[in-house]
Image (cartoon, rainbow, N blue to C red; front, side, top):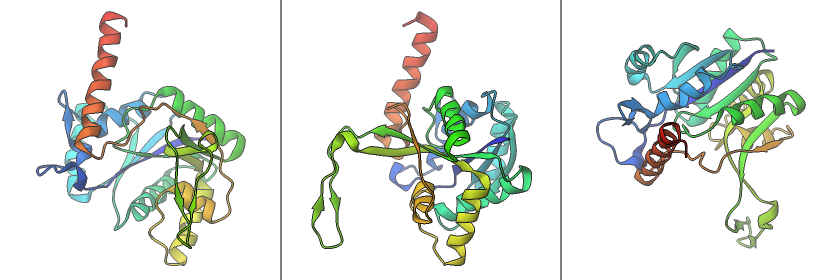
Length: 239
């Protein structure tokens, strides 16, 4: 069984309000956010390959960055689609071409650079057990769910989790769910676990790090910068 990461870096990053480049290519200490993310999978001993889904016009730049920062496990860089779901499908098609259908595929956002080696390992182990793994964090505030009749459902906070990424599956399962969605003309599932749940697959979870944020706003970028500096201080000063 092989383990492959499909890294989605297809968004334009409009909420970041950047003019010159998409959010995944914003730099911290001279290194793009997407490279911070890719390094985590590239150095993990159990990851066999990486597929990156990228805005088509930025593919040449990304390939230069892969060489510059010596990212060695990227098998293919493919262009994104019209929607996030379509972009992930493009990545899965590439994974299906390069890896056996019983491989474990970890779908991750290119702008989530604060996961850990343990998170990746936990995803692989959980999929080996249950065929799925959604990386979550506990809900730290009360969730209010609006119903179709405008009534409000308030689930218990202790029973509530917030889905993040990676979201991991057996490649065959997630690929065939995407094929079914496309057959039905559905292109707007918000994420992979929503799609898989819709088509009747059971989902299992792990708890990941609270700092595993998606960098979509300037505030998120400042948090990322602070976390990188904390990590650097730990390496230098041991705290």
